Image (cartoon, rainbow, N blue to C red; front, top):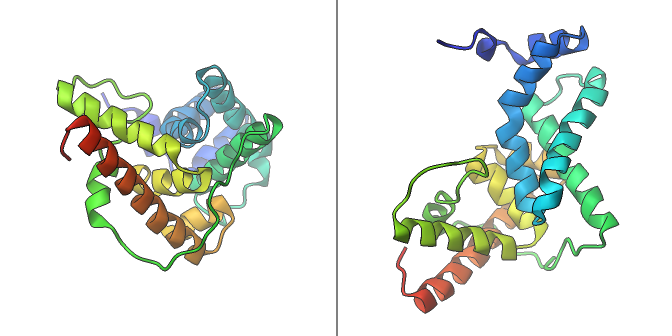
Length: 204
């Protein structure tokens, strides 16, 4: 049976949460849990911190929801909260955030996109063949080698389907910078994957 709350639009959902409806907030969490996990799990490696940070994101969202003015999509606003929450966490731990700030021209590397599409969801539970699991594990490992801005841009673009303009809002960067992150992130991941696949003798 379809969930009657699944068709609630963003404005109605926010209004119901602000009216104190507990079920509306649970619907909000259920609807955006995947997005928050994608952002948090790509930015933070420590399993002990991940679940706590995901909860913290929703607590912050609830706290500041009355200030949301629908000037952006609710998912974009929430993704920005998730990213900033993770950045604050990493800064407190004095973790390096930006390893490579060099600029590059905009461009595309389509052959890397197929590999990115194989990155599993954090909460995915699918039986895969041995080779598929090896491939997905390598892609996951490769994502972790990238700087935070590349990981975030690639995750939001390829896994959440956000546009460059939306990612620009989330990351508080100009669209040209986001395009550069996508270009360089794909290239770095592709180069890393090719090197590792050759080493592991697994083909894309």
